[in-house]
Length: 476
Image 1 (cartoon, one colour):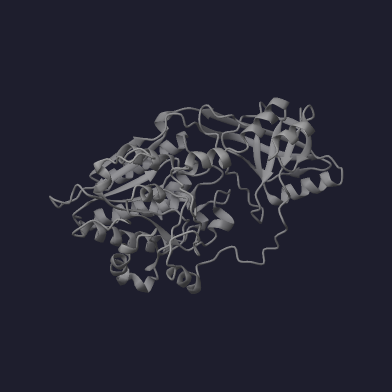
Image 2 (cartoon, helix red, strand yellow):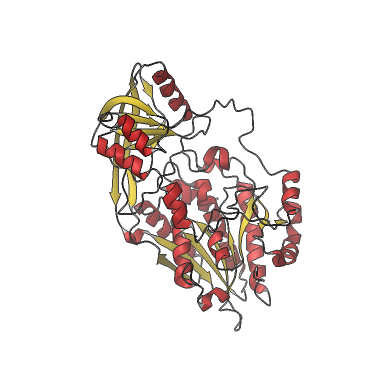
């Protein structure tokens, strides 16, 4: 808990490209050096990923009455150049840009734009925080094919995530670029948008114009569903709200900030020490809070795994390597750069020999909930091995195994290279309802017991994998 306290309260947030990220990386590096890790070093992953930081901001409605708007700016948007005041107009959909241009050309100068639909009313009858039930776990364990559905979490189905990453980001994550460019050219002042996170939660992730050459939006704010609802109802009554705001933010390019943090405990066996058991978590976060559950919790757990193994004095046969990845939120930037440097280029058949040296990769990135087991990613052959390794911890209910795939984090990269790559099954808690990419991603939502169980069990698991006579079996 001291690690996650430092990582979130002192060194968070850790937005990709920022000085804050690099300061946190230096802390992690120094911390693991002080534990006696045999190697600790940085590897750069991006030369044109920009940093962006907020110095101050404010968003208010000043007419027809005063209202403080619950807001936070989206990342990589431009400053406002002082306080701005303008009337609010509503554009429900901008998917048909030509239609938007036909309707609004010449009418947006000096306006703030409210975009999107008002979220449905949510009376919060359902629990905001949950753990997986026995029935849910049992359903996942009974699965006999890894895709397309996963009873416990998200899956990409038949989509080839790694080879299609650029297509996904250009067609989905960057889909608003042309609209933002139009608003900017028309002289719009700012943009307001919401995501239906209740109650009063602000969710400002979703801008991916992080590279130097990308279009930067006019000041762009995420607002709470309740603030959005009131503004939309006033517009529906033909009462024009007046919006006053300012955003003082800074964009800068410092490629040296974009680093993965790597540390190793060297193997002791003369024949096996060149083989590696890898663990990892993404180190970057979004910016409106401290990045405690996404993914400070995973980073702290995996760092603690290294500390535990080193502190025991055990000498694993294989090398144990931790990688804390940068740029995961922008499409696995850190782990992809690592893989292409060490394993070979995506879409090419030739692979470097280092691929064969990695016995396994274990990832943690589903919040701060307790480990409940492992997604096997279609690798049926490892099931009896993991069953035996986790048997001593059955009383903690951490030994549930499912053939299912789960996606959308860094283990996907290793799976693509046919390295046994696994994501930990974790209780959801309030990850998807309260903290994920929101202004409430804070230490208050990190349970101490869950973190202790996760670190202890993964440390034992990793050590056992490092002690095997042979590598874990490949999926093929």
